[in-house]
Image (cartoon, rainbow, N blue to C red; front, side, top):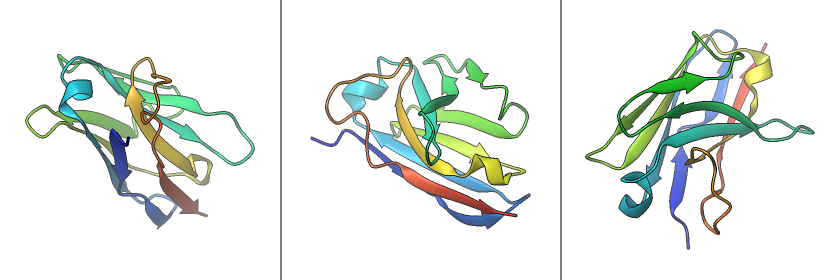
Length: 117
């Protein structure tokens, strides 16, 4: 049962931008802070950013000042704007609750972001 669906990834050059989106079921979105996470090849999945129901945000040091997380409560969607991308941002990006849930269906397929130098 898929409950979180990510989209918007792609291949960009260093310095470029992308906007990721995550559509969540209302039952998840309405009661949780939401987060973005990423996993690079050969590395563990790591936290990227979160936004609370009230709109408070928090970012990892690696992306602070370059990425912006937002949520659209009417559309049950959370976005991640990626600016000034670097090759080290290359990863599969996932959304989940914050903190992340291990419930089946919460970790979706993710969306691939590839940044070329």
